[in-house]
Length: 283
Image (cartoon, rainbow, N blue to C red):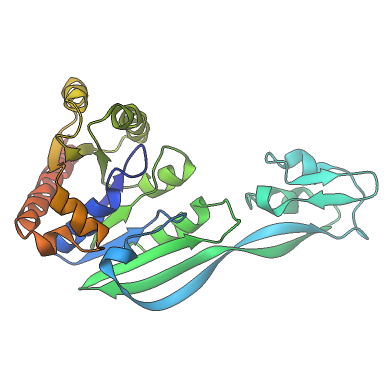
């Protein structure tokens, strides 16, 4: 089973839920940190990194001796990564999405493939958890290829927990698409509710079963609960606004280690997810 932990905004507690859930499940688990712009699950799990690999994307380079400046490569590019001038061709690597269209349409074979490093993947383990995360290289903007590379290592024999990036844009879709369940983490504030609504719309477009965890419960108001009830979204767990939990988190420690009663609560959360996934499969 693949569980993607997501939210409409950053700072709601996705990593807290992801890491503590992974440590609580009494099965073999792998955790994929797909928040590649700022991965932080490793700060809490402290995995032993066993392997690193680069994520490479092809980008075009133009052989001006072969080029006839026909502009076919520029016309097919929807991202403005190629500009054909009178006697020159400019390529913009940071705009290129590596779709390969320019290579296909060039009648003179003047488009040469050049490699661009997008970031790296690290493989490791922590307390019997198989751990993989991606890290986007500074200055790069193409997160989805790294996320897809991380997800390519999903082990079908393990429970897979994905720590997704925040928001509702392309990186989030890459982290959620194909999951068996999306666990949306929110907070009971106006900002939390606003961004939760966007996340719910996204998950419904993808047609994935989903439920809520309300973090910092008791901090704001009950608008999130009223929204969940109205939209028939199950609230699977509430984590209270608690100074001790905040202290544990700020020290880079695990809630389930310092407050053992929370291990039982996260195990109960996993059982609820299993039941919802099973129920969805029967419909």
